[in-house]
Image (cartoon, rainbow, N blue to C red; front, side):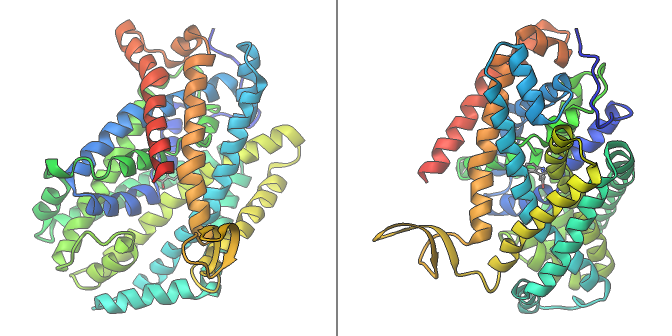
Length: 467
Ligand code: TRP
């Protein structure tokens, strides 16, 4: 029987709202900032193919697993896993995986907020015409000046964390659902405006070929990066999608819903690439710029083409909205859990957690300037140091948190969730929730969850740790 329980936090009005929410979570800096520059770095079309394979073979099975666990459990990830484990006669310690995921999500939020804050700075700068006719050195200098200034970074980080906390504090229906209904359509419209604009630059086909021309010799270059990115872009592995699943109406088919989210996320990433590369080419620049693509190359591009300032401002508004609808999904699992556990008010718990994330985020703020030399996890000739000032090698605070979350906690969480859905939950329970009628198709999806996805995760995990 499909569970009739509802979550104490409320429920989405329909499966469409779940699609909006999960797509809002998935579409973020990962799609607009990371995907285009990774495609630039790993050879265009070859990377796109690997990325698509990873999304469908590993990413979507995890998303299915998370959604069905959430909806069946109807509680925050920690309590959902605990309850379902007991029901299936397994150890309640499975809930530790969700606890770890919840902490990972808060850690991701701590630095995501700092980077998302940069888009606020760029909205102001572009809007004020500061990038008009700027040179590459000028844009590099402007970016350097921003990251070198802890006060300016703190201002935007604070503002972005407040925006995130504000939506979460208002609750599932009045906060999340209401704002998603406005922000997601706006996001799609902005993206289409930018795409339309890039078609007028006269370099559209150059961007198209860059993105889709297939170079077989580069196929293996970016496999690991593609798999890691599939996790990040779909927001899986920490319980963000699981908590959204808990608010999903009981009769909706999870199979087709999750497929829609995966396809939308991929379309946005590809459209962002199609919109951005022609603009980069039109300004006579190279697309292989790495992480600086969005904050250095694009401002130069926007600063040197017709209508660039207006389009550039719109672009950074798009980035802000995409990041905002993602950051709320990082805070929700922990807020839901602590509300269930302490029965204190949502506003209080949101404030405490947002403050905590803000404090940890200050470590990231300082990593770009005064704290750049504070290194953690240093392997030196005289042995291992947890912390050493100015060490060769090692990672600064931001790099450490990024590494810990994306290389270790995300894959570990994803593995736990997919194993739980595939091997702990009863086959019948999974069949009921997924609601895939065709037995052959169900068999295929179940096999992806049980075997293919876990093996895929193990491969990246081991390969990454050995690097
Ligand atoms: N998917 C988002 C992006 O592409 C980021 C994100 C949101 C995320 N929630 C997450 C990443 C949870 C990992 C885990 O930017």
